[in-house]
Image (cartoon, rainbow, N blue to C red; front, top):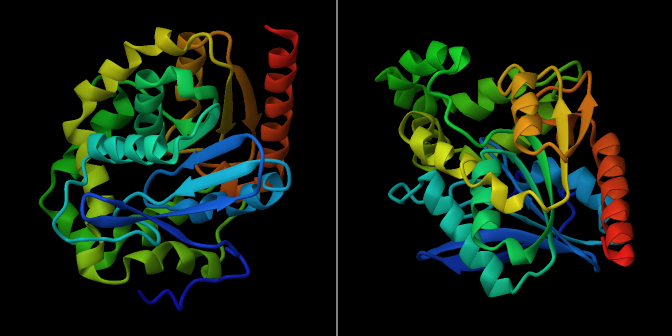
Length: 295
């Protein structure tokens, strides 16, 4: 598999592969200590967590996967790219690796994918960090209703398959005050270099139409995680998943800690990685202190 486009200075990690559903799921496993598992959304991959991982791997074990169809994982043209199947794949990966006491870090679609696992296996999850995500139906949300016609349009598959629309245009436009350089944008577009490799992002777009009932079923299970320490890290200039979603998370998880990044957009881990890493470290220290005190 040719990854000559990969900037190994930015992403200096050893690649590992996990066989699943006849495909190879790429992941990185860096450092030692408590396990932090990073779950990305669309149209990104483990690359967007790289700077946070470089900081945290000195004291923690940092694991980050690429969903099938993304990053350095296989990208078959024909595959079950549903959000639920991505969650099943994550579950199989975690159980096969026998990960315990996980700090689960989720972003964007990684929220429902990762938290579905947490609902099923709360005994394996020590704490949860959510960056700009959601966990409920958006059927009545005005922003969702405004894009529903676009999601239903027969032009959408053409834009995604022939113009690489999601990483090429949507991703850079979702940033806040700090804009993405051309060289970094290339690291997000090149995993989808060929038309046949672009089914993953398209499937996530279709998930917004097809999976709203499933998202709501996850929200209805939120009480299963009420005793888990939770940190909500939010880019407040996100025009994709707006700050009102942070408010809803806080309503559903009233004991969660929230940290706002006023100038960041949809990708805080890419836009302000030093701040995100520092907030994560503070959160991890607080969890360990609570554990030591038997709280």
